[in-house]
Length: 403
Image (cartoon, rainbow, N blue to C red; front, side, top):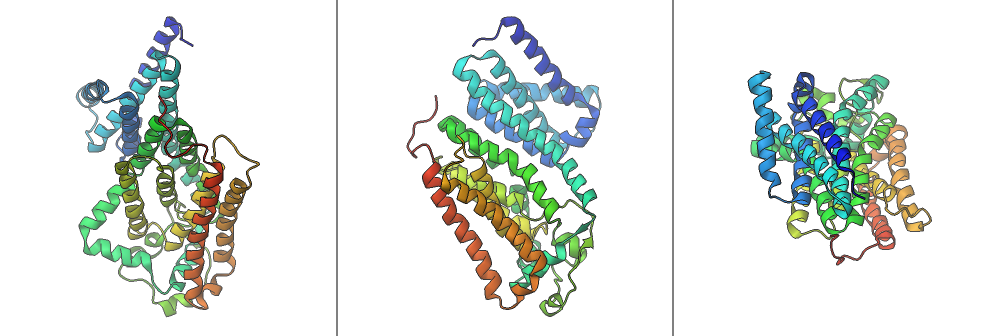
């Protein structure tokens, strides 16, 4: 249905006014537009916008609007220039152009642009609110359970986060590359979502639902098992001075007071890139290649930067399966394989939480036990996911893309 011309004009004025308000707000500039994480989140909108709308003439429009906003902010409002702000300007204007495309289009084209604009806006908004939600988690849980996670990692007899951290310290180029992939998480999310939106729209819906819900639901799990990461626990001793295993084995396990966001287990970074890889099925080789690179470098970065323990990455597997099963579209609640995947993912995460908290010494009986538990978690997750996909994927791999 075509919108009345008056409504289109009114909506255009509203969209431009909102974009201009955020783009010229001094508080929003200093707190958000200058932030690297938020800027990359906004840049992901550019990927969606250009892939859905086309390179021409939107790329030139983006450059022009970015230049105009930079002139206003830097020349007339005298804001301190920040490198990341330029990326934010691109993304903010991409959101504006997507909204205007939706307003002035009709039929299937409008539906396509709305499916690009609304999820992009929601993802950027969730990134904006994420720090507030994590701050609340810290207030609710002044003490963390990091010793329990560190204790488990020690039971493997190999302290992997410290080894990866030492590799980063020895090879700075490796660390820089991993950090770029770590910060660039919104890029594969946008790449996979826009790819499926162009190819098979029915596969784009559950993908973006999972991407959007992973953050809020992950924070709920952070409240069940609050932890913060080895670099915050050992501080200057990370990564060169881990506790000797004989000493670690005798550590008295108890909650410890640490400052920082409670965002260790499950690793949402790992969960997100796993979902990106899983949802990239059917896309081109270059899209899948980029996605798997994010998986590999995120695996290294989460540990090497000291933000996660190895067990955090293992628990991310069943958590990601839980999210994928939860977000099936169209809903298939009576599908036994879907319910099995949903329950397996959720219960496996909770069982790990219980074992880490209440039976940590069991893993020190032999290194075979924790390694087997980790391998079984990953292996069973992939097996359950395979059965789940074979019974719920509504479209064959060769389905033609949505017009």
